[in-house]
Image 1 (cartoon, rainbow, N blue to C red):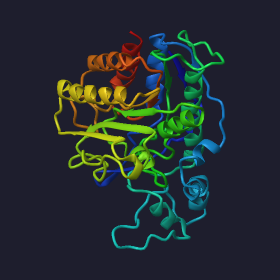
Image 2: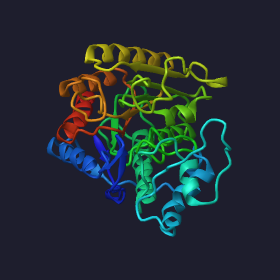
Image 3: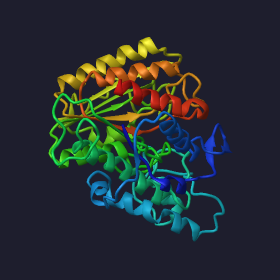
Length: 356
């Protein structure tokens, strides 16, 4: 399996995260990608290639133009203030408050976020741009790849289980139409899914197996019927992002029925989790999906520091095998996973399980 990777992820090297009432070094840091890449190489998973640049059109196809402009200039504006640290939101438009965008950067940071744990540092925008290019390069390669991974000029045949791994960092599934948070700025998986749609794929499914609900992906596709979104995640009554991911959130308007949420309680074991995964896979099959995008978070692992599921490393091999049984062209987009010691093992186990 080919892996897409960019060294520009290192530009996103924030020093502060608000966690448990104190500022701590971020759980989402450059070593995450390093650990995964090292395992990809040690296991000889396949070639590792750099992304090509796709420009801004795929981003603006999904994200609000004002939000994108904010991300581009946020650090420069923040740097011109008296503030000494990184840009951390401290105030945002809550219930019954004005929804007008402020002029001052302190207000704008709050206007364009939904949570306060994620700071913006000097290299955030450049890293986010590179991360979406990693996803898009994987999508392009997948659409034009034959079963051996060699680029060709025609799309994959139906019933192919070819996969490509986009080692995205920063992750993306919490990034909504016009909001950042949860370590996410641009929604890599959603941008890739839209690129598939814009390039002739009629029905795309996004399967989110990250521990945390992909509120951003749901937000982007909630009123659409051409992209199916399915998520297995910690019950929002107990887990971030708390205000998204309930089972009765099934879409709106034309998108009714095209969102499927599986919130699960603390202590969930693999058997229970896997039963829900099989429900998702059945829905993907019923949707007549042509291409599958997997938001690959492995923070469902039993030792992950910011989750409460109990999956073991061998379980990730089983996940990959079940995904392969769909026999769909599959783009794996890296999301969460924060237990450094086993992170690379768990990610690559999914990919190896998929390849059989």
